[in-house]
Image (cartoon, rainbow, N blue to C red; front, side, top):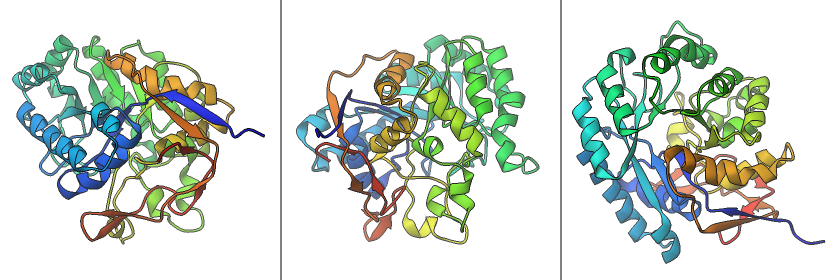
Length: 355
């Protein structure tokens, strides 16, 4: 019996956290092993708020790439795309400057306090009208972390409330603004996206396709399943799988791979984020195969995101093989610390050839 293989156009990751400083030695090598273009989230400390800061951050990433032991072909193909962090102080001029760089692909909206390093986020979203108008003019997408941060709103309801209370108003006021609903987690968000025009799209992570809140909470709290937006009910997981594998170009790959040192995840107040950069493709393959939709994976991973961003489809390829692999228990991270990946120590049915 022949071993099953799956060859895809080289994919891109339209939502990833690489961090900065020492972290880049780990994260850049892992991301560049599989992905050509990556949309790099700007929630650093301090955040990436200006065009000059974006250019400087990209240079740091490229230095880590150069210093890695990846093959020359992967180094040549890797293209980190920058994102500005939207704050209450962001101006239309900041957007004009970013548009001139050629490396800033989007602006990220974090409601203040929504997730890791989001204290500088926007407090009055609808007051950003001049910024949104400048983004419309330049065709720069708004990437949205779609959660209400009001402490009175249940954490499992925050995405739905954001759609109703905020995103609907942004879309109505700025009908030509391209928007990516990042890491959607609910049937509500999937159906909301489907109801909008083609200028509204969404990324979906591997963890939200593979898991639901039972995986996080039943039998004890599993900190490495904890991310924001939080895993939801199985009914939402099922709906996300349906739209991801539907062949609709509104939905595409965004891992939201987010590294945190193991001791900061396994603590009394564990950080939010799942780390999947190195094994994301096998995770997506597992999810798509679970609903007999492997034939839909290439478009989701390698075409639809590029099309939304107006970029060329990659010309290189990557091959997965149906061969079990055991995910490492940890990676070395930040010098003498460790980084625990999603499904550490577990066996996945797929692996990337050559990794």
